[in-house]
Amino acid sequence: MAALIATAAMAGKASAQGVVYRCPGPPVLYTDAMSPKEAAEKGCRSIEGTPISVIAPVKPRVTTTPAPSTAGNPSDRVDPKDQKVRDDDRRRILEQELREAEGKLAKIQQEYNNGQPERRGDERNYQKYLDRTAELKASVTRQEADIQAIKRELSKLPPATN
Image (tube, rainbow, N blue to C red; front, top):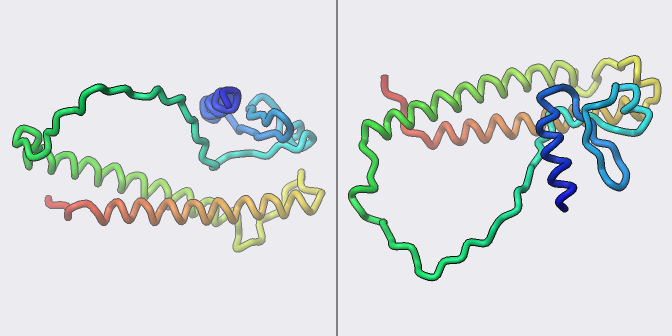
């Protein structure tokens, strides 16, 4: 388990440097230290756009006495002006994420080309083409779900006032 966590952590750091590949076999290997040709020969797949979860070990929290409840304490309330600033910041960030997600979706849809993406030179084997087509379809679906989630979050915010 620790090796998987370390491998996933390395993959997360490596993704900022280039394309990260997931290679099959025990142990599963995540790497960015190979060319696309080497990756294809070893049966590795690009994980570009695939979310990677890094799970850190959790230390159990031991408490002997329950924490005092602060519910209803007037000092815990946020000033309405501060809350408005927070809401405006959150709305701005979500709108920016929405624009980026929509741009990414448009790019993926263009490459997907309604299920008929252009064949690449490294896809002489038809199955490779079919695999890439399936990956693109999954990416489109995932991106559409992300956009819907961002829109749901935006709808939860109070209306913006200028």
